[in-house]
Length: 230
Image (spheres, rainbow, N blue to C red):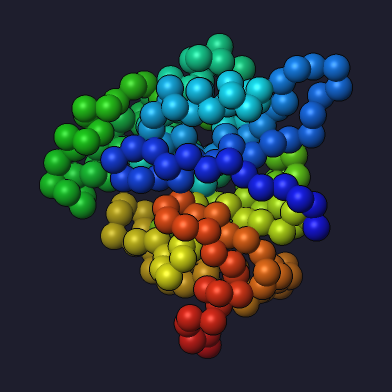
């Protein structure tokens, strides 16, 4: 297993985990390319940390389209002159681009009764430059489609390094809510079973570190032990 771990920033009023994950260095250059996963808020904080590490975002990956996981995307994308590739699973594509504001407002209205949080922070969302599907690879990260929390929820799995970015599908001691538009309890149960038990595509080792969308890191084995699996 490679000795490779992400930088973690907790951003925004909903305490979202934003991860910075290094890619292979480019020879004879002072800055290292990286992946930014779920820039949920506080673009200035993210940029400051990238600068301190001498990293730059080659990709901005979104585990899903909910606002607390991408509110800093417009500012981050603009700061780097539109050069990072912005990737989201194709089933959550509507959370980006020209129709995105209405989609995000509808999500917040469905749960809180109003869209004040979105309206206060809104900046126009760039269009995705890449729509992801199951099995795509971004550097050493493989895309796992994990619907349930949202139709296009995805995990990013680095098998060699033994880690998984699970978004809001799997947390320490919990899993994602399904009461937002597009949520599906049955699909989420299947995604959790896939992560913890495996399916026809294989299984994930129990010692795999899980970096969730919120809260502390855990392992597949720890979370597998907490539930009954039929």
